[in-house]
Length: 409
Image (cartoon, rainbow, N blue to C red; front, side):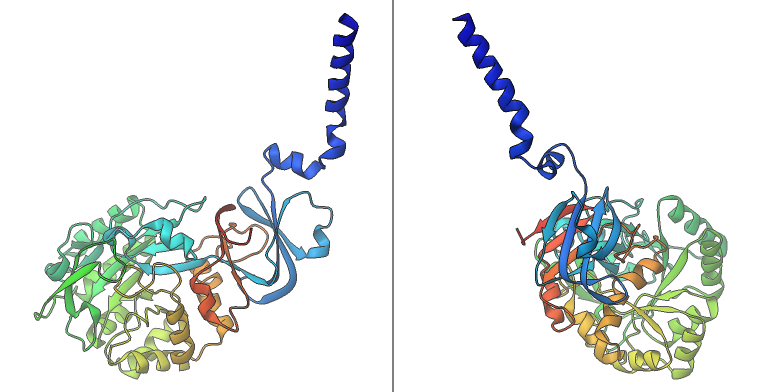
């Protein structure tokens, strides 16, 4: 009996030692905590141009290598072969109201937005980017007493009123201390034809994408910050290494923004802006966040967008997620309107929503697929340069190297 037991133990030992012959090394590596993923795709948009026969290696949350498929023949990383698909950087949304309107961040992420900038809402430090939506904020909008958006929405979690330069500077410092990556001011008189903000907005059922607020008409002209106060805001923000974005809709607000040195317009203005003012804005290198889909009923948007484009103005993608009828993800209609009104090629609108916006946010290599970039990426079946519509429903979403959606398996 003892001989039989010893023989049985020897057989088990021999079988254990033979296991590597039946299970290749890559499988063992994956099961022991391997963190590298190698993605093959027919096309890769790297934030600048479309490349073919290109693969992307991701390790520990970063893009570590981009090259031809043949360059990775010896790699032991887990392989995801997307076939006839296009891999792109995750989209960056520069104008949203996620926190104020309680929009589910996981839905936004799964629909292709990997970084979002909340401009007008609760203040918090930047977070996410590691398998969750990266969320940056301006905190509440700085405005005049009884200025927009207070008459329609109140001040809680969305606006802070100031009436002196000293108060303005203190407010800027407190917002930055609380985590604001940009400072937002309101220079909005109200009443522009077709403007969605010509009515006061109130949160309603945040669970329904197209009916999440009701409106109450506001006929009163809203108060504006003085140019001196706006100058103080800009000066203090710049001292603290922050840019200032302004909500403007007509010429008076545009003039104050230009004269005070505002860095960015949060929308293409709703009313027609005189060409001379638009020319000054472009000369000052003011960036324009588009929100053209949101403003489609405004009387001056077509004129302003076309003149700004002709003057060489720089447009950055923003669709105002949380606004009625705007998708909780990539707004393809925004890209299409940008192409037509701003006379941009498809590759240019893709850059505006990825590498250009990442560079503007001053987050190294964000919005690109190159070595060292955060591994935030999406993939769609087919070629979006031939049909932008397919971007609406990505089939792969990765945040910080972590896969949050994969319809390719």
